[in-house]
Amino acid sequence: MAAPDDARTRFLTVIGQDPAVRDRGGHILRTRVAVPAEKLDPGPRGYRVSVVDYDCTHDVLYAPAELGDAGDAYATVDDDRLLTDPRFHAQNAYALIMRSLARFERALGRHVSWSFPYGHQLQVAPHAFREANARGSSGVDPRLGLAG
Image 1 (cartoon, one colour):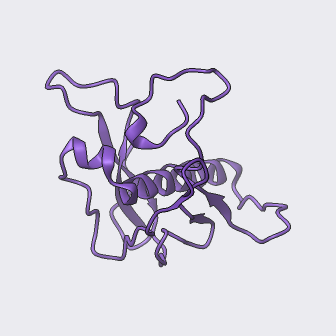
Image 2 (spheres, rainbow, N blue to C red):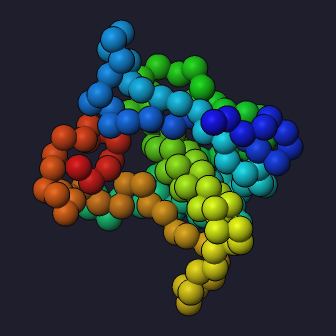
């Protein structure tokens, strides 16, 4: 269900399913999700979520994504760019987390407070490491930088 298109909401493109799953035309399944609109610093870094894209496996700090207020820069790009652009990976992580958090808080009827000693933000690193996850799967496209 789409959220109302107003000043409190912005839409961002995300990958809708594992990129190995493709539509009939062979394209990655993508969608646009509504997230609460907020002023974003590069990262993106908002009030609740801060993306710091550091890959500790390869000791690489990726340049922060600058989403700004101009809209969704990834709405019409090709699949290869979605898979290879670390700034899109930062947007994807930010949008999915903010969308999930907004829905969870709406269901609760209140904001979720964190008990982190360092503040009120979730710190997110989309390319944190390139290792097998708890399932030991390796089916995710490695260009996404996600643990498979």
